[in-house]
Length: 295
Image (cartoon, rainbow, N blue to C red; front, side):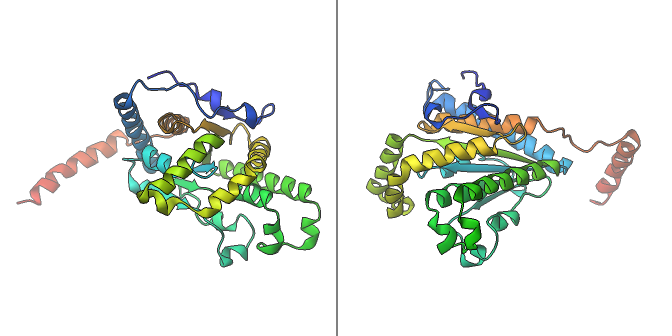
């Protein structure tokens, strides 16, 4: 396996992020499919081991966020990366179009209730970031769906600025409470997205993934690219950076995501709860009791 320098894909708010300069494809990190599977399997073991320690340590929680254009590979990446991780400490939440109940609340409300407990990892497939992506590209949602007061929507530039600030402050709050936030933007090219959408049409087993609306949204491709660029620039920090992952090759993408998650988990100061010598003697003394209960 080629050495991965994840700093090449990390943006922590220093300088300016330009989406036009971000890569959608890199040289393969693996020699062939066999090596790819071996490498990914090693990451499975590492992430599972670290998650087990985190579960026992019970001090940290981890929130993993995936954002991307349609057909970038979010679902497949989550399935591939977290395969084999103990399910008791792992949760997946997929955010679709807001329900009527969710629209009756502030834009962050539906995400609050799904935040990770200490000792667990929660994975968001899309998130509160939709509120500065889809809603920014289609601002009519603010008045037609979210029913915001008119004084809040008079100056949209101000509204987006405040939403960025609210998100950044929220993630700072999470970090201050022991919740690690790991954010991925899976960056796919327009050409690769087209191929994957066509595949969903041509393959009957993938028809269920295809929505006619995906084709319509492609007309707003440039608007979405600018929205992602603005979002990444406004909400990146040293504690909550964005990882911009090239997504044209799914195997590379999955290895980069798995590597990043393992490194982020390793950065947490955690261990299995220690036991002193006295406690160990007490526990060993119970061995004979347990054995005698079999008689």
